Picture 1: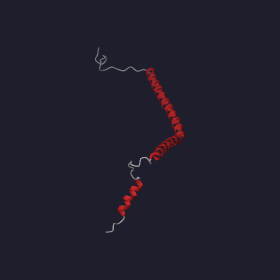
Picture 2: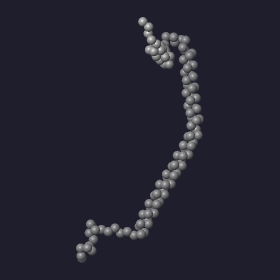
Picture 3: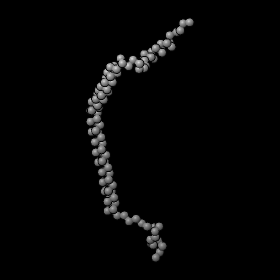
Picture 4: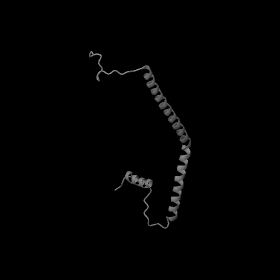
Length: 112
């Protein structure tokens, strides 16, 4: 046999047929269609969930604020009830008034 006709491992030819090409193309299209359907479905579900959360956002904020206010009132009432019996407990000055006194003492000129 001549050298050009011999088939060696280096000179293998890939056998392709139109049928195999169509099968591969169909598989690729099916995969693309499945991925597209998945992304469209997940986008739809996320959009629905965001709309539900957007509608209930004001209600959730009101409930959280109400819970905080009720807790603050409960703590304040308890402190006010026990304030008379706790006269020896150190209570620092309010930040605003303490800061105002410090700034006022810095800005007023001292006379000698």
